Length: 155
Image (cartoon, rainbow, N blue to C red; front, side, top):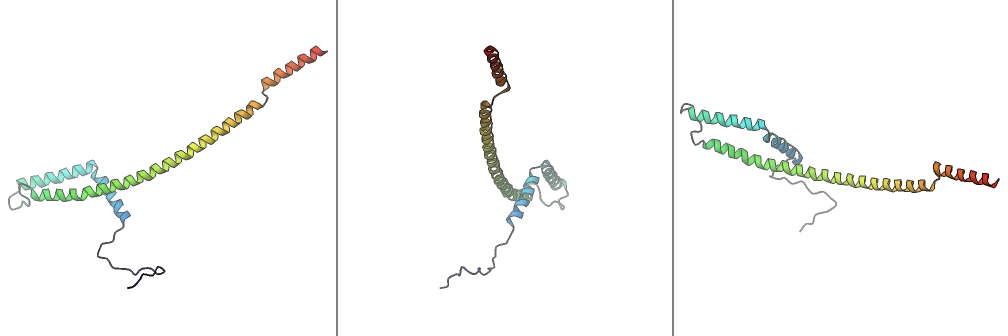
């Protein structure tokens, strides 16, 4: 019985599984999903299927490669759909992850903005209280006028 030493890295093992970069594969799947969602893709697929059907319906019998029930065309379209669906789902999952990160950043920004607004509100309230304690120009005029009248009366 051997125990693994924690102070040494594990020996590299060969694996039969293919190695791929998940980030690069995710970017590729997003590009494919973006293309599959365009009118250009629909036009291309319509042209290919139309040419396929017309060729196999009207070509001479020795040049037809997929006669009338078009079984090979069905197989090709099924294969395309079986690859397209997981790629689209992978792209949607990546977009969902980006949306969650963006939502979290937006929430943090909103919290920061709310804290700043509350701080500024308190500062403005403090300034208003301080201004109420200061003598205003009208107050000083009134007081000086009253004092001037008292001086006139006392003479």
